[in-house]
Length: 112
Length: 111
Image 1 (cartoon, rainbow over the protein chains, first blue to last red):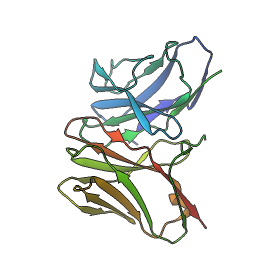
Image 2: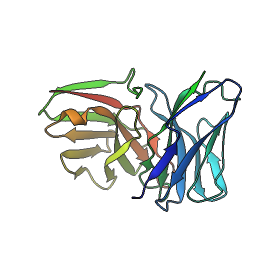
Image 3: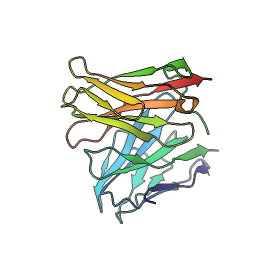
Image 4: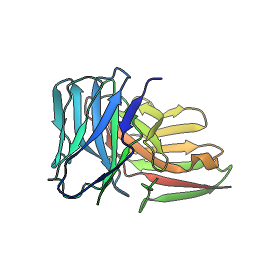
C-alpha cells in the first residue's frame, strides 16, 4: 500500500540535544512538507521541498533543519536552538504544491 | 493520544443529526479548498475538496459549499455518527502556493 510513514511515534529529548524525525513516502510525490501542531493553533509550516536537493523555509523554520537527498525521504532535525520544541509534528506529501496533501500519522516530541 | 482540540471552537450534536462546520478563509485569490478530518493523536485525513469554479460538491454523506463573495466555506455532514467525532480543518491554496490551514473545529457526536 502506498503511504507516508513517520517514525518514531513518540520521541523524548533532553534539553540541548538535537533530534531527527523521519518521514518516508512511497507515493512518488514530488513535494514534501513538515508542519508543527500545537493545541488550538492549527498547522504551521516549518519547511517544504518541491524537488530533490531543494527546500524552502516555511513560517516557523527557526531552530529546525531539513534535507532532501532522496525523493522518498524528508527528515526533520529539531536543533537545540528551537526554544519550545514540544509539539506534534506532521509530515505530508503531494504531487505538487497546488494539490491536496497526504499526511503521515505524526510524531509526538517531548522535551524532558 | 494527546488532543489537538484544546481551545478550539466546538460543535456538539446528537447522533443522526446533520452537522455544519464553517470556515472563513483569508485570501480572495485562493482557488482550491480542502476539508480534513483529524482524530486524536493521528494525522489529518482528506475528506473532500472543491475548486473555486464550483459552489457545491458532494461526497458520501458530506457536502462542501463555497461562497466566494463572503470568503466562506462550509462542510455539511449528513446523519452524523459517533465515528465522525474529530477536529475538522479547512485549507486553502492559491495557484502554486502551499496550503494554508484554518485552526479547526472540534465536532463531538453524542450517542
